[in-house]
Image (cartoon, rainbow, N blue to C red; front, side, top):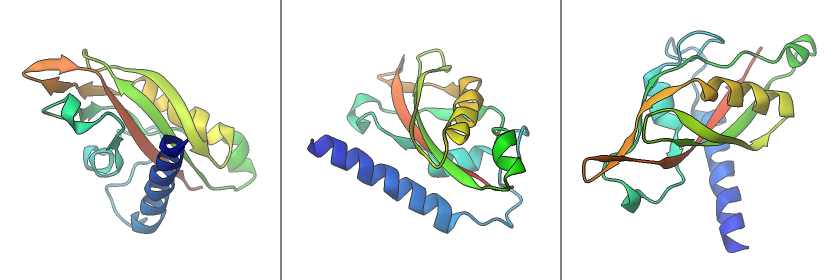
Length: 141
């Protein structure tokens, strides 16, 4: 039960950080369906895997920002989603799961985007290893 509370606290902290520190006027913010800025992913992505499991964390290489869900756009809603995923030894993503979201459509859009991202994998003693990561997304219309 205490691990559940820790996970919820980390999720809440990630969300608060994203919402409060995200500068909307920054040219380095992701725009739907455009390449995701590497520095934005590096800033907000956190590791769920203990840091002792790797010497070098995974590094985002390429991928596109999620599309704003059409139904939420029509309603003029904004929202967020936090997704968790594994970066495999070959740098692809797997086991993508929503942690929390204002609406499932936001989580679904974030999961679809992450599904096609590529990373330099985490490494332990020079060998690629799987690492579990968590990343918040903010959607604004």
